[in-house]
Image 1 (cartoon, rainbow, N blue to C red):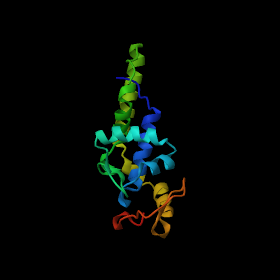
Image 2: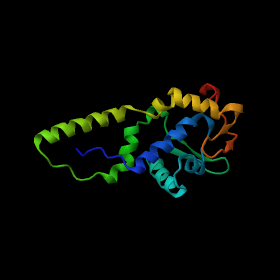
Image 3: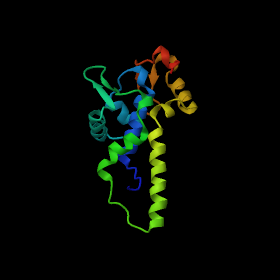
Image 4: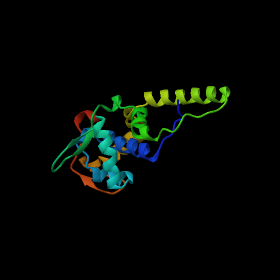
Length: 163
């Protein structure tokens, strides 16, 4: 078992998926919006979404008004799954060390992996800070990005509680 290593690519992927999860009921999200709002270059966002699409975590809608949506419900996408997917090629060789060292770090790694496997996008989206942010963004029945100021006609569905 290798030590948990979270790369920038996996952090960006989680942030991008979080953006989609937050706006999941409002329709497809253009990659340019994800790029600007999450502070990730458009070419890097494209690379990330290629891998996410192949894994079925997102699905694209072509054409005007198109973009990406989650490929599964936010409750069905674990943060650990995203990190494992994005960092699969970054796993280094297994650490060598004493039996005590391996017992401590292997156990800790299993605990962290278990925690991340149980933590989903929905867990974040339902948080009070995120809900308050969404309510502010959807004020006036339009969505306005707090980062870039873009105003969109995408609107939340009735089941999203106004956000």
